[in-house]
Image 1 (cartoon, one colour):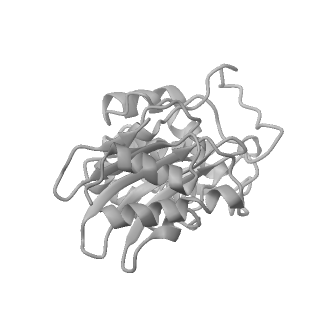
Image 2 (cartoon, helix red, strand yellow):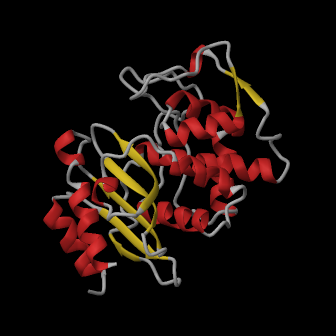
Image 3 (cartoon, rainbow, N blue to C red):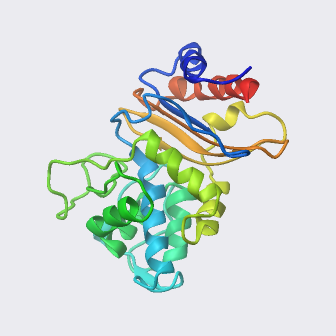
Length: 263
């Protein structure tokens, strides 16, 4: 069965993915991405951590930010809740490499906020747009793991972070093909993802999925680089307008299983 936009939408509907923005992009051999509402404006939640890390790595690679082993002091102002307890505590000095790994593999909000400070949100936005081609991605506000939201004096009080499914798929494609500076660092962190209850639940035997999730009371997302047991690679992104609950998150697995039948 050849996958197209209509079949992709049907698979999402059968799985119950409400308000979905989807992309499936075959990388071997290269093909045009297949999308459904791929540019839809949905809050990216923790999916924003991947382009933020990519921006930091681009600055490191070009000598504009210091080495990956440069240390950043953890301060109280960046502390917030996480789904898993953060190993970062005030007074500790983490390396940029460590912060990137924590932000991606564990979705650590404290590490993410320190990366915001290390690069600056305006600079990060310019890097991903001008150098990585993510034209609809923007960094506006640090992340909070719970209410009340973290105090963020650098926020304009209006705009939210932006990183649509279309940009997420583009970034995963670039990471897979090694065209993001220091892409191996990002790929390794994605491969060590600890949150694997969504699309990963629908993988076929022998598949590998290097990915990132995003969760809030408004949205639940997953996306990354699928490498099949046969060695074919795909960038796959599924954003939804559903709250992140056990019931909603369980719908991603059947969706991925349906996709695998058509790849």
